[in-house]
Amino acid sequence: MKTTRPRSRRLRGFTTILLFLLPALVLFFGLVVAPILLAFYASVFKWNGMRGLPTDFIGMANFTRLLADEVFLGDLWRGLLLIILSVAIQLPLSLGIAMLLNQKIRGRAFFRLLFFAPYVLSEAITAVLFMMILSPTDGLANYILGWFGVDPLDWFADPSTVMMSVFIVMTWKYFGFHMILYIAGRQGIPKELTEAAQIDGATGWKVFRYVTLPLLGPTIRISVFLSVIGAIQLFDLVWIITGGGPSHSSETMAVTMFQFGFKRFQVGYASAISVVMFLISLVFAIFYQRYVMRRDLEGASTVLRDQR
Amino acid sequence: MSANRHRQSPTSGGPLRSLSLHAIVVITALFVGVPLLYGVLGGFKTTRQLSSNPLGLPDPWVPENYTSILASGSFWQMLWNSTYIAVLTTLVVVAVSALAAFVFARFAFRGREALFTMFAAGLMFPFAVAILPLFVLLRMFGLLDNPLGVILPQAAFGMPMTIIILRGFFRAIPGEIEEAAILDGCSPFGFFWRILLPMARPAIATVSVLAVVNSWNQFMLPLVVFSDDSFFTIPLGVQQFQGQYATDIARVMAYIVVAMLPALGFYAVAERQLVSGLTAGAVKG
Image (cartoon, rainbow over all chains, first blue to last red; front, side, top):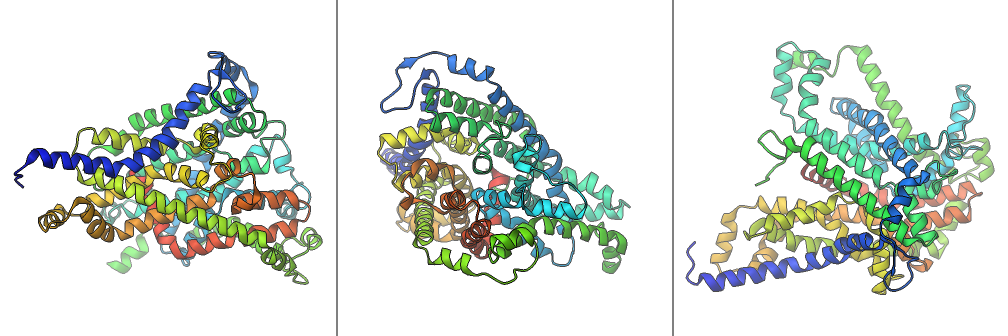
């Protein structure tokens, strides 16, 4: 298209772009970027969070305190534990079920609907439901364990079982979400490929191991990524069920931050925790995009449709 | 050939194998379904029945737990609050993101990719990271105990995903349509409003469903923004009710079942949009 008055057109184009982007920029800078900057700022002050801006500058003291705090180090370890459990147990379960439901099993539409349903419930509802199911006194879980002669457990009330119990609830709520991702990924694999492998004599397991699984790579990597981000920010479930207890044994970074920020009014210190959470997410995301998902984001063998 | 292939497919390797595969699915279904069923039936029991007979049918059926919740005004108030906040959040996030996604999809200008990457990067940051400074900012703006204090941050944090999905969709619409519209004297906004948006209806539906579900289930933000319980949303109400009636388990159970129904009903209606939004967002993010 030839333009007769390029300059005024360009100016008009610029104004249009600005006007269209303005609301998004205002919202994003005002409520996403500004808070993160504010967290960085507040993290080097001793501040009780009262009105106005903090004044009592203490440098990196909040961070040195943080890195020496057993509860916070425990948060890191528990976060790692949840990530390991998710990747080692929850995701393989999701993948296995997705592969099963990809086959002509009777009632698969129903199963798919059922397995995904917990995802749409809020963590608050899930938390309260499982507080009752995993109640040490008259919960359903202990009742069922009784059938098999297993002694009743204390679940959330016992420091040695609380993380396992939290993980069970997370699996209940989220494995269906990952299953849905895997089903979609599996449907994106052309039939010809698996059929060709079968014609070449590959059996069920070999087809899965050497054809389906590698082609599911991008989906699996995304699913791991989402699990990690989810574990870093885990809050609602833990806050409602245990509040981090008993004696900090189920506390997560977000719970610790919330305790200090909203209950104990050590806002500077809590901001330092926010900053660490931010940095962990950032470093992980950059590292992961760079080294793990790199292959998925470029080249022709990706599932990314219509990227330029 | 097709019958033969059917028998050989990795799916069915003899009746024994298919039986065991089926068993895995059924066990998983029990793991997911029994807690839900336990809740629904539990709501019809008394707390005493519940501890002596956790799994069986209620005997006798006690509907009072459910009827007393439905008869109380506070539940309906929360339902209204949740709905109102979800609808406004969705309107804001979709409108703002659609405008931005339009620019990212159909205009060429310097710094576009950098700007887009900045928005997309917002996807990676957990909400929990920002909650504390967000609270400080909202207090500064006087938005505590105000629905806007929940609506606007939710919209801001929902933008990355919405922009990514909408941009992908807008890009797929052929350039010829845009050229034809411009030749016919359509302004950029006219093209966006009268042609692009109507064509993108499925994508708009998808991102709207995502926004509704995220808003509906949001707990942390309303928890810090609302201290007056006349603003409470359903997740806050659930926590509050549990605190109040902790010992009356049957009643709490009835409450969470009632609280589940709107979400499950919405899921039944919008399952397809939700799944397509989540998979598109995950695959493209």
